[in-house]
Length: 102
Image 1 (tube, rainbow, N blue to C red):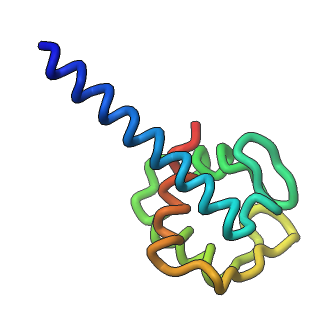
Image 2: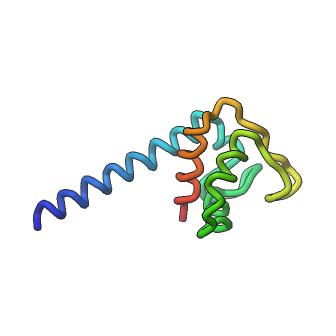
């Protein structure tokens, strides 16, 4: 039984570390200049994005592409510029983190 608790704690620490790493990636790629986790800045709050796309199986791929190529019209008149410094793998990590916000 003790091993189960140790495994659960270890898994929680790994997940917490991953969440911090993805937030650090968002900061490093300047995503946080226009977005925040819980409030609208230029673009929507990440919690709003997560709520809008909750349960949408196509959202991760679509949003990862939007991170790289940019987009417009979904959240208002201000377009999201492309971010050429984000790799496809980084875009997937960023989107997974954004969609995990509650």
